[in-house]
Length: 493
Ligand SMILES: *Cc1c(COP(=O)(O)O)cnc(C)c1O
Image (cartoon, rainbow, N blue to C red; front, side, top):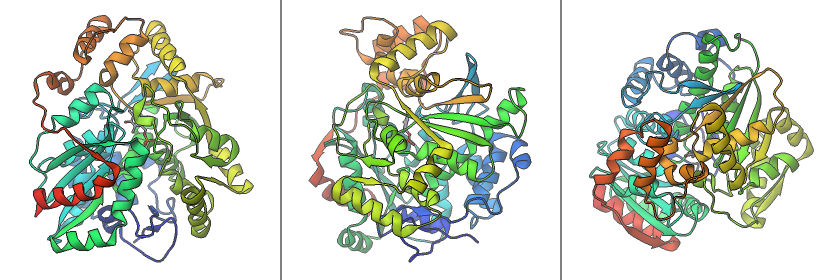
């Protein structure tokens, strides 16, 4: 059986079940396993069957302490009619390129692919453990709702979600504020996503809080993309997209493929790297950023420098300056050099920046490319993609499409990961299409978008019109710790 350990040391050795429950290592590192390739199913095996079959193979490989029965029960529960496409993540054409639609789940963002699965993985991982789990999550907009929806009323669990006040879309805020369930709490914070994420990491590292909650029979865990249980399910759709393209005759099994990924916390694109390590013939992973282009600069230069202004953009789920999952990539690029990763992360914490050695940068460039899209570029791309191809893109997807369009095509299949339904960001999409949205509310924009595109908004988004708001709390960053403790006692004790 393979074990997981921290990116920053090999002191702890955990099964994947333990890693899923713990979320983050005690030294602040992320859980990784050393050899992702060893024992991986063959590409041929991964091309057969359905999405669910591929998910079982991927999960069975990366979470090898789960039994086949456990994996099957998780996959069957996670990927059923909660997705409004039988393909789960269908691929569709867009000009000469392709779009991988990852937003057919209950909250209309790609986070559902992982967050419909995570509660299942936790259910199995917790079996026999009488403690309750409080999921604590910082969200830039989409993770929070997807976590709430995944964990709502799951016995023995609670969810506390923190989002940056005033920095999510109307629909995103309403999705969270109207969440059903007796085990959930939603709170805005006075700060941005990075402030929320940094404080959540601190809460997990707070030994005194851990002890106090332990006395209440509660453990904290994370649904952020730092959790192994978030990362692993995302690997599946890279293989699945490739299989769909092979079935469509767009490529032959064995051909190279490029993916362009709208990136924030680096979880989605890292899953693509895992797929490559497991044998998918990925040539290039293009990391697309918005005006918060810390990753673009990092990939270009090898220096990660978070000391820069934070920009609020029309792709808010990517408004991030500290991309947590990049730490895992550094681990693999350095061939498992935990000391190096630990020292780079110490530099980031102390100085706000780090520079990777030249050999690492070279390995990074072997697979990764990058590009940025300003809000203006993003709007122009939404408009041109609609006018030229009749495809409606949300702003995050449009960031990636813009970046891909800047790169010369050479006949290799190119896939843009589409991470949200355009209806999640109706006002910005409508405005990008040239409409005057002044004075229009989020739902009027949704109506107008339906009329203009002859498509229908996802039912769950339309239903927000009449859903009562349940949550309106706002706290300062230094109030988050106490909020978590209160909610753990209130909801779980
Ligand atoms: C979360 C999110 C992203 C960024 O994904 P990461 O895994 O954080 O890089 C992009 N687009 C949308 C719509 C998202 O919700």
